Image (cartoon, rainbow, N blue to C red; front, side, top):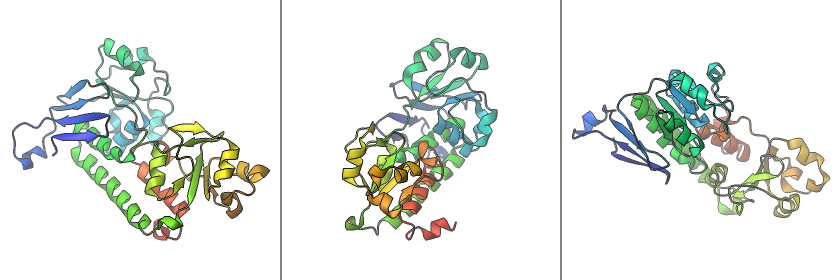
Amino acid sequence: MKRLLLLAPLFLLIVSCGEMDSDVQLLQTFPYTVIDSMGNTIEFTEAPQRIVAYDAGAVETLFAIDEGERIIATHSFVTYPPEVEQIPKVGDAFNLNIEKVIDLKPDLVYVFSETFVPQLTNAGLKVLYIKTVDHNFRSTTDMIEMWGQITGNIDSANKLSKSFDEQISRIESKIGVVESKSQFSILQDVGQFWVPGADTLMGEVFNLLNVINIAEDVSGYGQISPELIISRDPDILITADANMWFSDIRFANISAVKTGKVYKLPSDKLSVAGPRFVDGIEELAILIYPELFDEFRKK
């Protein structure tokens, strides 16, 4: 087990294993400490039994490693897995009902934003704040392993993390045959011409899939003009409303529209930086390179 695990530039996870040989360290879980995104040290001497998981990625991860029963509340924007319908909601992604959280008597509150941290800690609650992953999707495996350590289910977390990395490697091996001169240009419109730039999860996915993001110069998510989209002429469009692109005469000569390569993603897997994210990458790869990923489609 590594003594020090770097989770992007956001925070460090420090595993306290004592002076033991490597075989024994693999079985050691506690004490375990996490340095959160504010630089605070959060120590775990035992697995929390009652977790308010105020983050969709955390909820998906806990269920994926068979620890979902520890979740006693989340927020109303969390929709996966189906079991979350039965979990109490204590607000939405931007508003947290502190009183409801206190009444639930959690032994851990996990949040993706620092907004609520002072109120929660002042109420005497144990809070773990990790800034939400908005880029570097590969750090998803670090988050999976962190939850394995916190819950004591290291084996399940390590298996899931390994599977995530192996799936990325399989996708990369397929994409490796795509030459630069064969690259497609792409744009994702999330609505009203809001698009992801290079420093986003989707920007990184486009890099992995060896396609050119025509909004590469956008920082984070930004709104661009129809005229700019037309001038940059994407070969592929990812959108929630394909009909809009086909029905608007302004876009009639865009390559993606002329060739019919205007796609709606088959699922929401790319919307949350959790274990399913890699499946979303695969879904997008199949849309872009159907001939390369024919075997994936038949799974």
